[in-house]
Length: 265
Image (cartoon, rainbow, N blue to C red; front, side, top):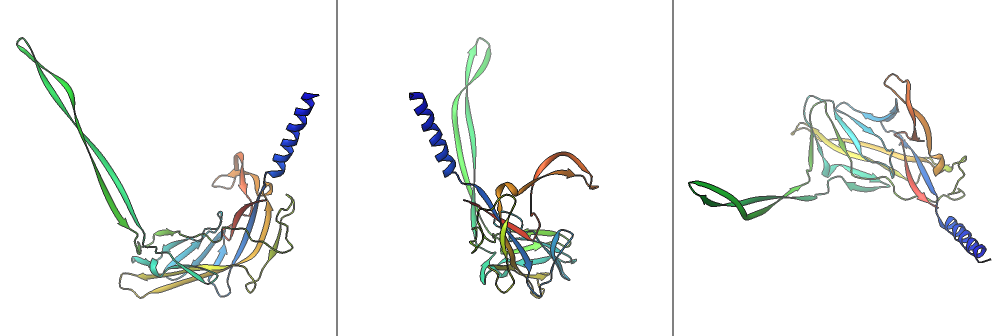
């Protein structure tokens, strides 16, 4: 009888733990360029191509990567001014230039040993005895660069901000969807919950006239996905497109114009 009581208690505890444990869900955000934008999605890439540069985006990451790759198309050095380059979300501007400073320290130790002479007849010998050591520490401070130079026909990656890090509540949408049925809402540019983009300022050459790139996007769809349905098993492909090797787990919805937020329920 006592053993049965213990088993009942253990079973009850297991049920309680299972009830308290939370499951993982993903909120996937689909984005689109705003009206009039020159950003295009083609061949799996999201790019703005101008006369002097190509700006490429890939938002797909947890909380969304708002950064960009800037490629210099000219034969001159391009200078990007981070103090006049902004990530803007819902009208709020955030400067890429943070005026930060970093300090690094480097320590070095010099050991000094002494030798003691011993005489053995006509021969002389020396024994090492305990000496002393000296330690010096050097600190170096360097500041964040405001102007970033990009050589001709080279690319530089700029990353500082995330797009969104909290899941969004949607009326009438279940936040704990089944594995086989993601749930969400679609939005227009007029009623979207998020508009965001990068305003980039640069010059071609150090004395060139300032040029601005203004790329803007909006969230066109948000879906809630069961954590078990967020991954699929696929085979890797070689450079010729042929399948090879074992299967690996790949995230669904992984395109440059999407990003995701992880939440628990």
